[in-house]
Image 1 (cartoon, rainbow, N blue to C red):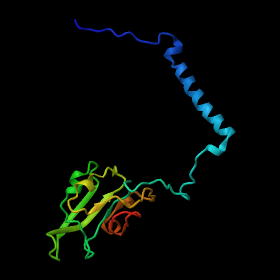
Image 2 (image 1 turned 180 degrees about the vertical axis):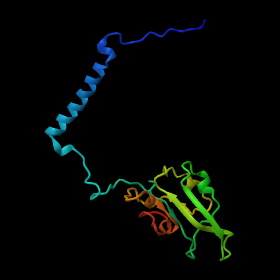
Image 3 (image 1 turned 60 degrees about the vertical axis):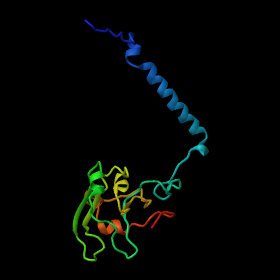
Image 4 (image 1 turned 30 degrees about the vertical axis):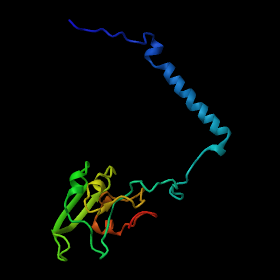
Length: 167
């Protein structure tokens, strides 16, 4: 009939309760514990947030920022490519007509919900104008309310690039 019988391993009670695996894991844990207890000089700690990590590379995806042109106008043309490419659907744009005749549209409202964002960088890759970047170096943000994690266009324009990044 095509039925294949697969024999089960672990017939004894000791093996069914995973006792050897649990004891092996506890052995490793306690060996590290007692090694660190005897010699605390090898323990690497970081007194966060007083000490910030120094090993953040330039390619790290931090909090988003919007870029500006040389004439200090917003580079974004409200094409909705970033919000379309976003797998978390956390980018919200409302477009308006542009008065300076540089482009047809500009964002009237542009917001990103940082709690929904997965920091994948899809928005940066999708943007044809290089208007959005994730090179601020801001990797830790603490707020009191959920609404405070939704950053608007003014906040996104105020973020500066990390040292060594492009303007």
